Length: 248
Ligand SMILES: [Zn+2]
Image (cartoon, rainbow, N blue to C red; front, top):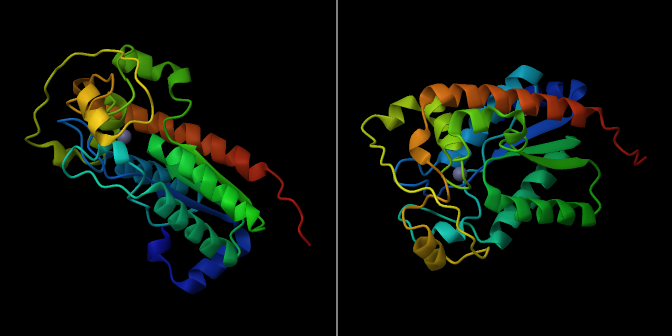
């Protein structure tokens, strides 16, 4: 169920039997010379909607923009400052909590959002709001299953990974028509973190971070998607069993 397609009375009905809202969150940033700018939010949104469908949970509109300052030397990338992103996330959580949602779960597609998401949740809790706040990066735990290793042989890397690009190929196949794959070197470089935009570009000139982006395919994307959805369905089922503290 998509929040954007419901009326307020349908949301009222939903809240009589459910207490959970899923919110996809991503970023708009370069993903190498091959992957899409929207990779992170397209992946998070596709996965969140599939999870929502399986569990009959409501999915809010996607937070498309994230915290991506290190990608700003690559044209088309856009970033919110961490402070702006935190404010947006805090306001969204407060909005939904005020209507009686008690579990707000973000499905995250971008590593740079992890710190700010944590801070936003700490802030809402500091303000005294009751409820369960959590975020789940869709890629977390996938490596433990062995599938990523099997598909990409230790060359998935850190950014513009063939796993995330594959996933978006499965979700938006038409967008890849005419895009050309280019092979390059896969290195594992020790570098400081975080980086400025200029530092990022000088260390990773084509935007990949230790990733063999060209190993991506639509078929592999369907496998990654299936596994990511199954993994998250399990995690969210577990989280929904967590008893909420009584505030009455
Ligand atoms: Zn990404």
